[in-house]
Structure formats: C-alpha cells, structure tokens
Image (tube, rainbow, N blue to C red; front, side, top):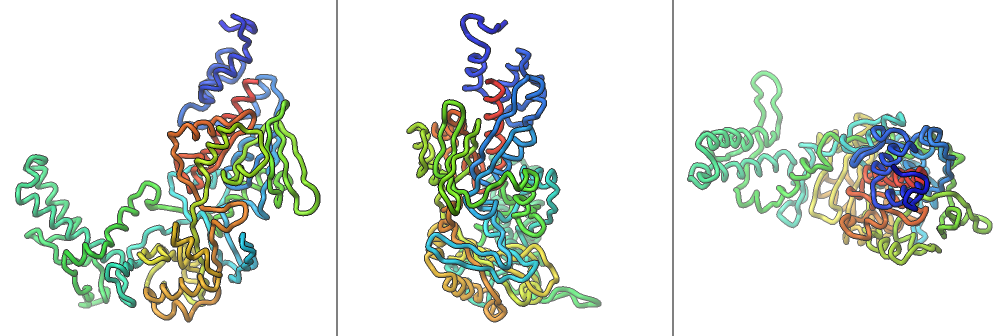
Length: 536
C-alpha cells in the first residue's frame, strides 16, 4: 500500500512517475486504486476516449485550471471544447481573422490576402461556396461524431462518380474525347479478368488453387470482367452507351470499342481505381451542409465567442514556475501577455520555431521534423449554368487527369439550381508551387484552358468568377500538411509535451491532412493535460 511518505516517495511523486511513462488510462487506473480518481473502468484505455469530466475535480477535491489554446483550427477548437466541458477555463488565441485554419470556406464577399500581399475578394453568388481546404469526411471518422454532437447538418459528398471523366493527356487522351470513368473501369477490369481467366485455364494457378477454387474464380471473373463464355473480353453494357435505352424497342447504342488490351493498359487510367477502395476515401463520404467551416463555427458557439480572440498571432510561449505565459500581438497596440496554468499549442510547427520559447533543443528539433510546408492549391470557378449536369450528365464526383490541374471536383450540393461552382484544380507538390507563383488571373486562365479540353468551350464561356488559394502563401498557415514519422523519437517527445505545454494538430497524428487526425491529436493532448492535473 502506498502512503503519503511510504518508502520516501510521496503519492504526488509516485503519480508523476506513473504519468510520465504511461497513458492517461494507466494513470487514472493508478489514481483510482489509490482512491484519488473515479473508477478506472470509467477512464480511457489505449485506443479509446473518455473525455475529462467536471466530476474528476469534484470527486478529488482539485481546483479547475486555466488553459490557453494557441490556434483556432480543428485541433485547437476541439481541445478547448473538451476542456471547457470538463470545467476548465479556456482562452483561444487565433492569428487569423476567422477560425478553422485549413478548414476554410470562402463565400461571396470574403477576402484573403496572401503572403505576397495579393488580395482576392470572392464574387460568388449567395448560396455558392468553395471549400478551400478540408473538403470531405469519411463515414468512419471521428469528425462525424462531432458533427452529430454539435448539431451540424451534413449531406453526402460524392467522392466517386461512374460518369465523371478520366483524361490522361500524356497517355493519348485528346481534347473533346475524355473517357468516362465507368468505361475505363470496365475495360481495365475486363482485360484483367481475361488474363486471369487464361492463367487459370493454362494451369498457372494449380499450385495455389483447387479445382473448386478455380471454378469459383472463373465465375467471379466472368461477372467482374463481363467476359464471354470463352473467357475473352469484348466489352459489355457496363462500359456505358452513346445513347441509353429508352422505350419500346429502343435498346440503346453501345459505345464503340473497347480498344485493344495494349491501348487500354497504355492509357494508365487503371491507376485511379484504387482510390475507390482506399481506406481514407471510400464512399460514402460527407460534407457539412453549406460549407465545411460550419464545423468550426459550431465549435466556437459551443466554446463561447468571448473565449476566442482573433487577429492575435502568438510570438512566444514559455513554461514558468507557476504555469505558462503566452505572448501575442494585437492588430493595434503593444504585445500582450496572458498567463495560465497550461497551454495546448496547435499552430503549424514551423511557426512555433520562430517564437520566443524556453523549450528544450530536443523539442525544437522535433518540431523541425514535422514542419508543415507541403504546397497545395485549389481554384473555385463559378459558372452561370451547370453545364456539367445538363450536357455531360455528371452530378458530383471528381474527374481525374494527368495534367497539372490534377483533379476537377463537381459540386455535391445545389443539384438542379441554375448556377454552380467547380473546383477547377486541386493540385499538390510542384504543380501547386507553379500555380501559386502565378497571379490569380493567370491561375484562372491556365485552369480554364485545360478544362476546355475535357468539357468544351462552355468551360470558358460560361465562367463568371473565380477564387484561388495557394496554401503555402496563406499567412500563419504556410503549407497544406506534413506526413510525420510517427515512430520517431521526436514524435514521441511532442506527444508528451514539455512542462505544462502540450501539442496538437493533424500533423501530430497517424492520419495527417484530415480533420479526423486533428481531432484525435486534440483528444490525446487533452487526455495528457488532464492526467497531469489529476496527478498534481
């Protein structure tokens, strides 16, 4: 039994030792056994989440603490929300003029000024918006839990559409002749099935399959690849029609083709199909109704607008003898200093390294490992007509290309309305840097000139306005994402925090570039902070 001074170790020091090398769940279990915390069964275990509760204070006689949250992106807002629910006094400092970070939705009248001093003001109609950053949510993500908990209305985001296009210019696609996704998929599946069927018949799989196995495989391949009775692929109605069946004896006009096996494989369009079954991207996917920033707006309402300070870029974070001190700059006037018991910092890693801090060199080096700087860009093109629906029969989804615009997104909202917005490019890496170096007008011109190859002249003549973003040029963000090595010692150090400062952000998670990762990083930061409070 551990007493207050048993074996020269105080209960407080013992709990600090447990907390330093264990998860919050282990610490809570230890505290429960000592009668200092609620029952361990009610506390989080590895891979689980039980938010801190006000009863954790009342049952242990501890006082509630003050916490400064740096950054009003998803990680910062979720941290503030979970802490405030437990009774913590929170203050959120946000460098930009609005919450969300890379969860940014632009509507008509919104203005953004990039790091080069270039200002754009969106000229979109009412009800039309562009999700400049986060754009979709998989149904398994914790983001969906927050949508429901906060009461955010949501709708389906069409991530894959059989009637969207594929256009690989480097592999033979020509202007005015894009390939429907369903057609390319049918041909790739068909010829792949033919080859597998041939290999089965030739005995190449005898060492792997029994006779029954091969029969089952042939049945599957005939269906999956639309094979003929002799195992060959000659096309099928799964490729689509040039004229679809209608009434009486109008059976429809099948598409011509398919092209030869060599031509189909040479198109390299099969490289897009794994996207459909990728664990991050598989349908169904969702989006908040009216714009992705609805998530952050609902967080702010729950936290209290008076607890979130905008236009307050942080310039320093320090551990002090009694807690933390955070220095920030207001738009007008001298710098301000706020003191609190704890801090959670969810700003981009490369920004933190420019601040005045008393963190250890190891923490600074760890932040250097995970600095966010990857470029990504988007452009929103508002059109006076929804010609992609009227003329091309594409209702939502994504057209994939090998051009530098990479992807074209069709809106998953406003079906049947007169106007709409297409994301005319969503590119990353070198392509994003190239577009980012252009003026907004040049970005529009290049994106439209390439889109015309796929959709024809209406892609140019129906255009009304545009708005583009290059994330590496957004002040206080300076990049899109980082993909950390979660096995590195630096990552482990950042997870533990230093002193009374903890870190959060999608880059501090196993699933960077998603709000899901930001939310889970916030939960673990909150969990670690609360465990330290309960051990003190």
